[in-house]
Length: 208
Image (cartoon, rainbow, N blue to C red):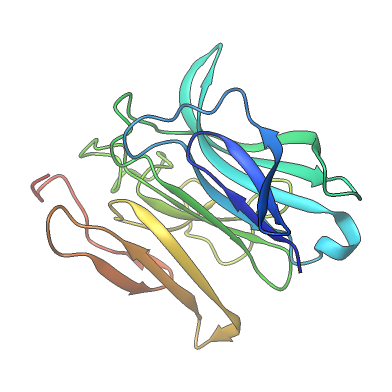
C-alpha cells in the first residue's frame, strides 16, 4: 500500500500517513525545461528482486544525456542502493526540450523505454540514435526480442517518435501489439499510438 513517486528535480519519495518521505535525491539529475527525472517503474518481479528503475536527464563528467538506471529499494523502503546505469547515451537537449523518458516493466521483466528526440530533426529517423524511439531491453539493458533488424541499434523497437511521455502495457501482447504509447505535438497533434514495431513518421520534414 505504499505510494512511490518521482519529482522532476531528482527526488524519489514515498507517501507515508499522508506525508512525503524522501528515499533518494539523485545528484546527477539535470532538471531544466522538459527534462529531469521523468520516469519511474518497479520491476515486474519486484517482490523478489527489489528492482526499481529511473529514467532521467543526467549531467555527468562525460557530458549530458538521458539514461536508464536500475536500483534496489531497501527492505525498509528507506533508500535506493546498487545503482547500475543500464542504458546511457540517449540524447538530451541542454534546454531540456524533447528530453522526456518513460519506462515500464512487462510481465517477463523486460523494459520498454520511450525517449524524446532532443529537438534534433535527424534523431527520430536515425537507425543508430536512441532519441525519438521506443526501446525494448532486458533488466541489464541488453536488447530484448522482437526489435528492429540491422542497421538499427538492436535495442530499438520502434522509431519516428517526437517525445514519448506515456506507456501502458497489455498483460500480454495482442496480435504483436504490446500496449499504447503517448507523445505530445507542438501546440496540437498529440498522439496515442499502438505499441508495435515500425516507423511512426516523425521526420526532419516535419516542422518543429
